[in-house]
Image (cartoon, rainbow, N blue to C red; front, side, top):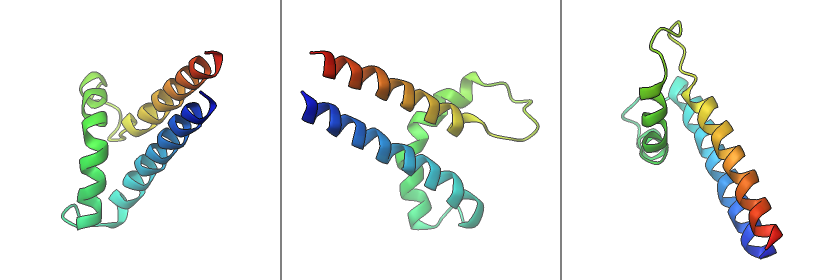
Length: 86
């Protein structure tokens, strides 16, 4: 079970970095750039439900990536601790 817990942790850590890369590249790359489109295809399905739940009057700032990273971190902690307790 330790190997499975480690694998889950690594996958979720990589996904967190993908979210961070997507946010950073959104400031510098054109929306039609192939790298940005690939990252958006990976991240947007997770960000869209969060964006629907958030109020729109946040001063033009999008906090959904931060919320997604926190949710991934929480999910990772719960799943890894369950796997390690088995």
